Image 1 (tube, one colour):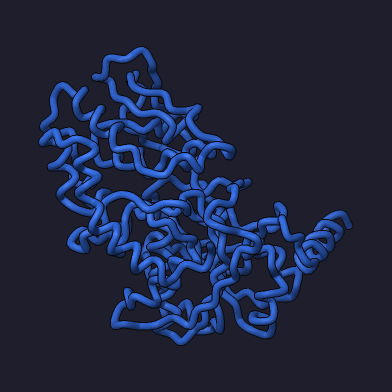
Image 2 (cartoon, helix red, strand yellow):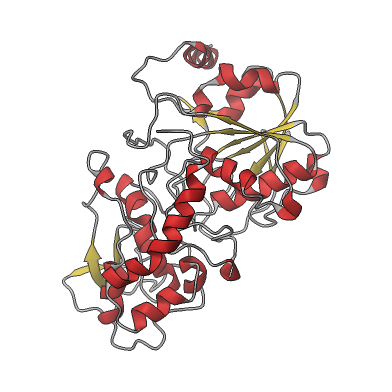
Length: 384
């Protein structure tokens, strides 16, 4: 009885008109997307973040009588507890609804789409190029376009929506951590980004997806951002999400970003630094084999930089972290690994750091590409 009451309360919330001051993500606006999926065979691209007031979207839709055929899960899995880069097998929801991994095979398989009329995409993203949910979105759009299936993207706020920054990807370095010629921070919601994928004809063979965006209500580029379900195992705090575009570049170096601690992407360091702050990575649910496992790492504590009140003051990537770490590394020959250029999106940033170029000059080298990208981006913005 209590469960039915919870669902009833959610349905009431979903169908009432929200106040003018309420910021409302697309997933809550069921009255806008239910008419498009009733009497349809539906596929869902979702994970643990896909909730309406702590009730998972799949449960809400099932309660409303929606015919869900299957679920497609991105990196980290349906439950959001797989490590970065960890492959996971197909499984079932409640022993009946197939959950297909979109991380192990990347692309939607045509045989999984044979009984699908429409797909809903609802995942909390962080607005950073190497965060793989936008790559999953690309492949979902491609599969839908290839099979004449409509796609509804339930838009969500983006914590990095108020700026663009970083080198624009050179498509020579195209990979799953960077598929499109965009900067590291591209300043768009995932709904806006989907429009850009379509409009710029980035899908294979110039395919075009039949796309509908359920917009965030009462939202703009300077709206406050709150989050209840963090998007992946190693982004556990608001602060880590804001630091992520700056610190993730260290994943292509021999510097640890705190995976295997209680504060991943809020610290950085290595055993060979000479600082007072120390952390010791150990295997945990978010990192089964962390860099420098059980070794003391000396470095920098960034845990108290940002919160929901001051994050809008963060309007650029901090390259000083990378420059500082490189300069303080005694043996520099193996500082960068082969992954770095994929994260950077080019082979230039590495050479700039090695040559001792200043942060100011590195930033100047991005300006023309950022200006060109911004002209493209402007065509697809749906929020002021």
